[in-house]
Image 1 (cartoon, rainbow, N blue to C red):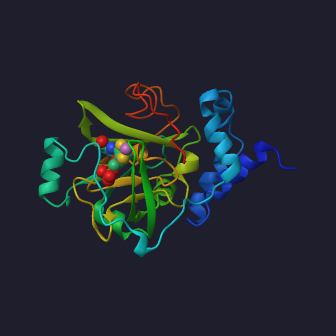
Image 2 (spheres, protein in one colour):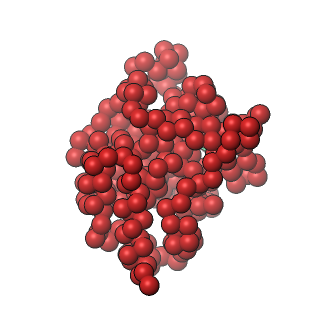
Length: 254
Ligand SMILES: Nc1nc2c(c(=O)[nH]1)N[C@H]1C(S)=C(S)[C@@H](COP(=O)(O)O)O[C@H]1N2
Ligand SMILES: [Mo]
């Protein structure tokens, strides 16, 4: 009989499969650290652990081209007012850079071309918004694990925080995921949707796809990824725009 502790370690190790030795060494460093002990004590995290013990590191369902939705609506912010963003958009994002920092050994500054030159993953998945609509779309981009492996996580890192360019009701949009989802093979930084570059409405130039979670976790307009030990220092402290006092759960697993 496998203990829950062992299962969780296996999940962490499994999360690194397929992205090379850099990544495996990153994941090895995760093993033996009390990543989950604090979370287990928190009743709010029970759903997450129950689901993960049942599904392991399973993939979200993927669909065929024929199943793609003819219309994929845009939701939340569909444009960004920030002047820096507007000038990048007007210039085709040639001078735009993704910043990866925080608890990493090597902070990264990546152009869109650099992100496109990394190994790509393409996946057709169903997006489920809590507002009561779903759509099946195709997403393409590098796996987040590749980028995190290149940056090299410091041992204290437990979360990836995604800072977005938009304000929703005057507040910066942001999201966060833990390292299990960060290293999951279907977690990608998508720059392409339905075989075309992302439009502004869908999060150009880059958005997160974390396919086992609900729509609001799929951060659009990602400008900066920050590795952090805890979430209580960011904005409202609950790890995301919708989680901060707007009633949505941090772990939005399906
Ligand atoms: N930066 C940012 N990301 C965001 C949002 C937003 O308002 N701003 N809305 C979220 C919600 S609630 C959903 S359902 C999806 C919508 O993605 P779409 O516009 O591509 O359909 O983006 C999510 N990511
Ligand atoms: Mo949503």
